[in-house]
Length: 615
Image 1 (cartoon, rainbow, N blue to C red):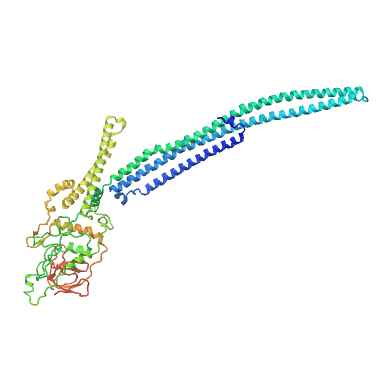
Image 2 (tube, rainbow, N blue to C red):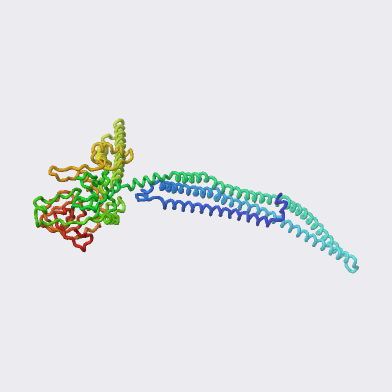
């Protein structure tokens, strides 16, 4: 099967066909080029997508990636970057191995094709010239033969005419001979040119054209083979990245399988645990028996005299405040004295003074009403992390709940330890460098490092003092928190052994020499800390409105936390009536506090909100 034999007369069609083959090759090159552009665009979009969902540095999102689900998502984003990289590899390989190579091959193919068809046209032109020469010699031979024939006829006519002179006859004879010679010459020339043309024609159709067409055929077959190889390369480029893409997908599956819902739940606890305990049960109040104006059994802080657990923040007592109580209600509980009010002076008891003022009797507030008021108060605390509203946070993180404070202190201690280790490494490096300088003075002056060594040592000492300070605060917090993990228990064990009173479930009552009740130092400090924690969140809370007035019947020296001193005969505003615990909350200008109800005469405004009728 040869184009030179089978298609010897299809020169023009072969020229069109080979041009079509080049067009097909260029079309395939364009297809691959557009594919590479799509791969690059896809990789760019994947990278942009992964970058869009990457956590921003120093933001809340970065903290969220502590959870295993978020870590798996972050791993997915990283794998998507690698996945996009493989598509970039596909684009690069297709460009270098297919597009560039085929573009170069197309240029070479065009030159080769042009050369072959140029030779073919040259052979055609040569055979056409030979043909023209043959035609020209043929026409000349034909013309000379006719001229010789006419000259012969003219000679015969002159020779037969008796009237013609001999000279004319001789002239006609010579002319006929010349024409015959010319015809013979033309004949010989025509015969020679014909033989030459036949030879050239044979060479053209059996040698030149078959050779040229054979080369064109080989060129076309190479083109077809090359486009097939390019298609294989096209597939191989994709196949080469499949294992890496498979690894990316395997890593995504592995990251998904690493999600631990229990661990995430534990992280939620660690992130938001306040360290407080739930509030204790509200005790039953029996209204079937008359009750005196003494300490109420349903008070959130129980009397020490009855030996009941008192409300203690940061310790392990059962009576705890809920962290979503309004500030006024919360602060009244925090600042309300935790002991029964003292009785009026003996000389001025109502029984000794006939006309003396009687403390107004007060009907017990229904338990259901108090519970509803307690539960319907709107929560103000949105998050313990947002307790600080304005200003710098305390250095000891005392504005945070106990558990969160412990975590922040522990983190601070760890950071300080890392800085100490870094400074120690730097000190060791300087020391080694100084030793090198001592051994090889030409490398440097050892004394030049003394200042730097002293500075690093001072930094280490400062960091150690700072770490000790935070460790002390951490030990203090861990001594107050309930039992946690074994590691935390070991860290706080030494401190608990030195301060056993801070981990008792119930606070021990202490009585002063004069018989009055005093607060334990640990309880006072804890109440103060908690009050400070919540103050910043409720800065915008309006003060309690006055619900009436009162007149001091006796002088009262308010020495305990939450109380206020009054002078006999002084008139003050009532902002919170006696809730059954024997204390009334009053206000003098900007000063607020509690006084014993039996020391004042209360005049409530019946139209005021929260006022109750005494019987």
